[in-house]
Length: 193
Image (cartoon, rainbow, N blue to C red; front, top):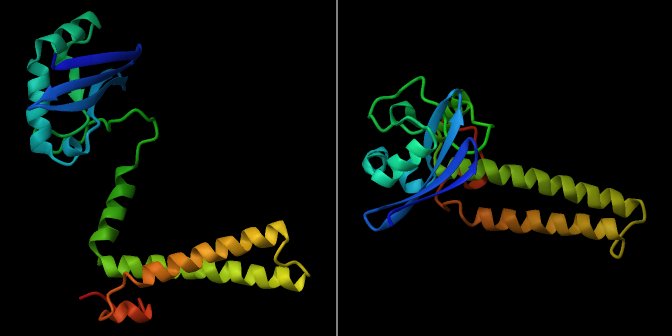
């Protein structure tokens, strides 16, 4: 059998479909007065052409059509959460099981930020954040020590372990920065050309 499904509740159905010898998982759910078919495989989410092929084959699958009919879901009213038409549909409903969907404006800001920074710049910024946390916990250790707390004190030992974790992370991340990069000195004030 190349198609299986599991009805989770009256508005959610998990679907597995075999296409080309591979199993792909989908979630069919009711939202905003329509049924949405959402692929759960990264290979489909990141590849609209492949999504188009698999979804077209699924929609033509007779057991799938029978399941839809038994659940009183009209094939003509079915929507997909990914754009399989090749055009961007502004009314497309975001897919998934969760009600907390990312705001597309936020995603665009993150995408823009990623596109405008090199990996080395992103790594350097993360390293600076780790170093700031390390300084914070080292200062906390120093204040605890001045309060006559030290090794053997449960809280001191935990803070010391956190500082070690940040120190290790800082050391490992520093090793990832290209030694020839001007960012090696962690100066991020320079503009990217």
